[in-house]
Image 1: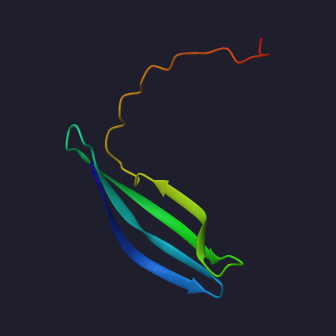
Image 2: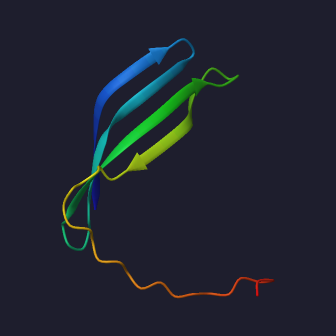
Length: 81
């Protein structure tokens, strides 16, 4: 349904900029919100435009109870025994 970005820090190191922060995703069907932390790395390309060269996102660490594991269907890969 929606995504809200919050920049916590933008660090400039010569030709590279690193942005760190979080986004909150809102589910379109349930309205549930999930916060995810992110890191983006930017560099200027030959055309002078900044481009993302690095991206990482993860759900923050929690000491709460682990979510139940979902059953995974095993599928044989081509050529595997």
